[in-house]
Image (cartoon, rainbow, N blue to C red):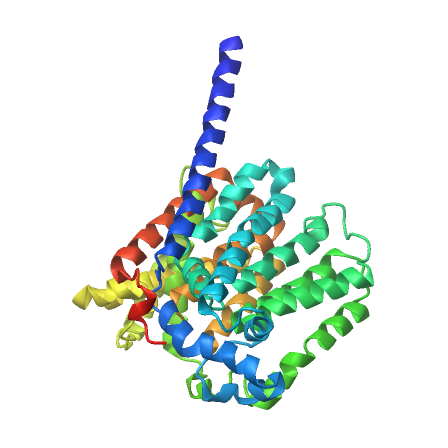
Amino acid sequence: MTVGRQRTGLKANLEVIGLFALLLSVVTSFLVGFLLREDSIGGASFDFYYFHWPLVKLFSAISWGQAIADYGGIAAANNPLLYMIASLLPFRDDQTSYHVITFIVALLTWPLLSWAYYRRYSKYGIDWLWASFGASTILISPSFRSSAFWGTTDYVPLVFCAVTSLLVSRFQDSEAGKARAVDLLTLIALVVLSSCAFYTRQFYAFLPIFAAWTVLTRTETPPFWVLSVFLVTMLPEMVLLYLWKGINPPPTQSDFHPATISVVLVGANVGLLSTPFILGSIRRSLADILPGWWGARSTVVTLAGLLVFIVALRATAWPALGGGIIEKAGLRMGALGTPFILTVSYFGLVAVVLFSIRSATNALLVGAFLVPFFTSLFSYQHYLEPALAVALFLFADTQTARTVFSKRVLTCNFVFSALILAIAIVYYDLFQHLSEIPK
């Protein structure tokens, strides 16, 4: 028995040391990437110099109302909150200072997200160190890194996701029926903070929707108060819709239309990014993650559906730049490229359906999360990564969350994200110096 306790203690010590070493490596990598001006999605530096920085200057030079009305003809399809905040910074005229600020804020997002993970999962055996390890994956996410290093919008909404989770976590997984009503100040804070993610990026419309749903279904708060506060908070967005005559600024409205290609690219990216969660949840066979009613008949129907999917969309014209690793790999595969892309896309969509039918909460999360991606011409991988993992961990229903937020899944997700980062850096080879980019 003594020997057994010693081995257990040694194993625990090695685990702690290993996690600390990994976290130190991740933070070091994040710092080195910033110093080397890493652009691992291959477009963040271009977007910054040609879109985001001019908009920061625009919102600093003229009134916000005038800037919002037309964005000065600059083709940026994001909601304007980041530019409003940046226009208030004392160092807004200095690009280097701006990048340092965005780097620091992004790095601080890691402990904030760690706190959110810990608050939700501590009662399920996840300690602070493992919560920090799970959150550290954002620091090796190409999308998060590029956005943080170049001061674009994609990292900012994750801050609001973490804060929203901290506010709802105290009643989100209540097992004793509905929690008591949320007080008015907390409700207002929840609504405002969740809406800020949407006001930064249209793709985060799911966050205020999910926050309202959670309060309505998990607490005794009167529906009238919940809906009233949320509707009032949405008024600024209604003003934007009126000014722009659509969900996007006027210069980009020509790109605003649903397209089959968006559905396929979203499915392909979901198929790719859901891989670590599926692999990490399997212990013996696929039956560990498939619903109980799944059998041979379901398998045959699914494979038949794949054949129909490939035949029906075999003539899809792929964008030259692709929409992520799957598309880029497919474009290099010649005749096998289209079946490869469509197969991954199809099974990504199947995974979405199976996830949705587990509960009304999951169905709402999937619908609110994915629908905005279908309103743009192309849906790139960095739109969903790492947002998909963060949304899944923070806002999936209790049973699903407990299944996917395990040490095994977190390890798979970390390794998978590190692999994606390595592929992105090798593919783009874009450690660029500022002197190489036009000002």
